[in-house]
Image (cartoon, rainbow, N blue to C red; front, top):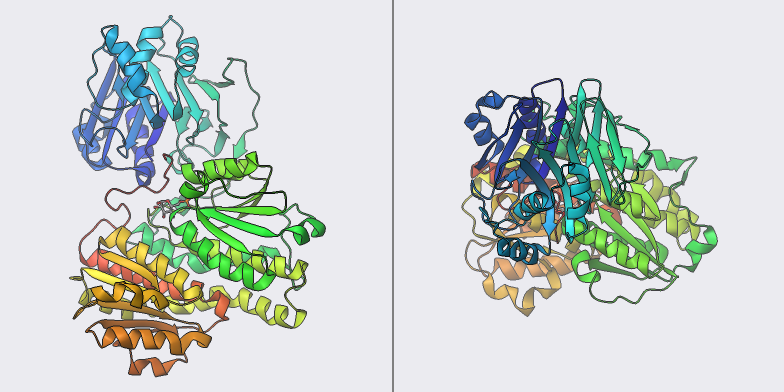
Length: 608
Ligand code: G6P
């Protein structure tokens, strides 16, 4: 949520800030702004709307001269998207400028105190409090002023601060919101995420909570909250700039849908050695693994849906009971945890506020945590006891695709690994299962070849108002994800149900023309779900079935069938999800929506 950037160096700052913000737009895109020090004063240009509005307003940065500046792209929390609520925020004297990602939880109390002292606020944001407090406590030295302000702030924040009285530096702070520092011979950077600065440098510091950074054009010093210098290793970013570019596709989402076979392959293959799954990252002894008597999977959004799939896989293969929890619930529900539990945290970004808090809650109870994370060095990755990375590469589109399917792949690996270690998965079953696991990416590639069939169907259905996704067994998890995808990007109301639940209420909503998508990959349950589809059809529904390539009998029931390559029942999530991602994509494109940046959403939800 929200992206911040900062630059101090030898180049003009504004174009660099705009470029950086455009790479962070996935984090929020309802307003944007930059402030640059011109040698005498801080100039600010900010506006409601996307970065392109900001670009035209400041003539691609030409209106803001100077080599030090900060910028922001916003996902509104406090105060509607508007010019005045956009960041950067200033103190009354316009000598201090602040950009912020996060939430200042005690801002109302602080605001009242400042108002009592005569401060007048321009915006409804929590962030303006920081700028005004900086003004109130300013003692001539920006660093020590920041320390005084931080001592009074509650909440989460990544902050970038520019001060006209100390114009040769930028101060940045991190607590519970991500922030990195980029280093180059031509100046130094702050950013919420790596793509923002990758064009300029691959050398970064990944900040920890409670760290304060002072950037000048020639160097960077990192301090703890007591302003003692902290030593940190430089991280070299290995991936390429092109990984965060569209590469000829119209949208990042389509590019990322096509990258799924690679993401799944890269997640699975390095962990298969000599006919066995080897998870070096999991530092648990065989004994410890055998002693696990309950697993909790905790996540948000699509990662939660991956967890629902994971429950079926892990329970089936390892016979360990698995509970799947939404992170926002888990953290407050006082779960029953002991040393024989394992908490698996799933997160693409590794920064989702609820997921991070849920993991901390589990750790507080002394429970071992294993994170399935995509972003290397993210907060969840750093704090978990063990990390199983999904090697999906950077994911830019707000609606996850390759992030999700690579999470499924990681959970398949984990389920098989636990089954193998605990001897609940026989060698006889293990070998063909491993062979199948290894060829899943090839099957996904084949699937993508027939995407035009889905496009045809989506174009026919752009007027839809309500969609129901039904599945049984592991297909229910796929239904959840397919429904979320459609909602997120095409703004069509949709619901996912375990097909057996249909008669307990939702069937009342079926009428002539309602689209019902049946996910039918579990051979053992074919008959059951077909009965459910017949029930909706006889009430006027149009039935789309996603099923295995050999299940042609479904044509008697469904109005339209999309066939997917056959795989083992536990692995079908990887097959059935892809056409439904494409369906959501094509409906959204046909309706003319912004697929990569859907309204009201943000990719990295770093506020509660
Ligand atoms: C946001 C994204 C979803 C994602 C969820 C959890 O809502 O739009 O695509 O599934 O956050 O994110 P995480 O990074 O923790 O997987």
